Amino acid sequence: MVGQRVEHIRFGQGVVTAFEPPRLDVCFDGEEKARRFTYPAVTSKFLRFIDPDAARRARSDLEANDVLTHQQIVEKIEANRRREEEISQERVEALRKKRAEAAKQAAERRRMAIAAKKRMFAKFRKEEE
Image (cartoon, rainbow, N blue to C red; front, side, top):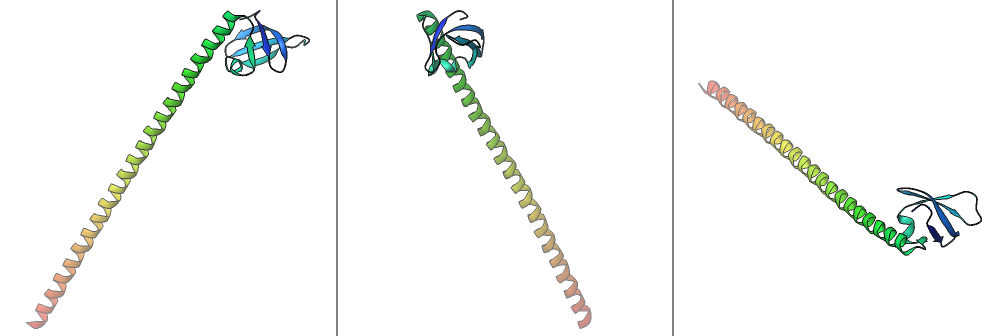
């Protein structure tokens, strides 16, 4: 890649001075300082290689990058779905615990009410005797 001629839609023609993925430095004609671009994304819209072999390589790298990006998106979606399922499971478990606790409390209230009625009936029986 270094030494390849390129053409940018805004800056015109230049030469690749450094290439360390994902960075590409290009010194454009009439400029002293090189400009840095993100490779291969820049080749999709703004920059093209004049040499056909370099252009094919850039296109191949861009397609590989798109596949990688697609895979990353799919992985993120799957991770989000797993997290949503975990959250849903946690909510269901919390609801189960809450219902179980409410059932225990209701059973205790019924037990206490029955015990109170038994005491009341026992008190009335003593009074009747």
